[in-house]
Image (tube, rainbow, N blue to C red; front, side, top):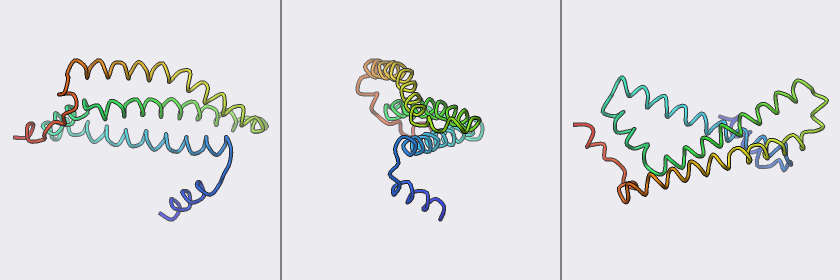
Length: 148
């Protein structure tokens, strides 16, 4: 716990440039992916151990909040992958670390070029699906409807 507090304190205190911002974005995207994997593992385990709860969670995951969350997970996966490749390349060639700012900029541009069309497509599909359902799209499913 103390190392987590130290990490948070030092990340707020340090005022670096591209390297620092890439470090923060890499950690946050990794935490977002971890959160998704934990939720996904719990949900998938319910399919076997508690099918009623699984059916409810599937209905819950169709809520617009989770659709927006899917777009966020897509962003996290793309950035984390691109930045991880950048770090790996720089680790294999330490003399290239002098190009860290340029490489971080390339990662952000590559991320934007690939994510923006995908994110917009996902958003348009989400609004189309919600438009078909109308007001029912925004209602949370009740657990009592699935567990009887």
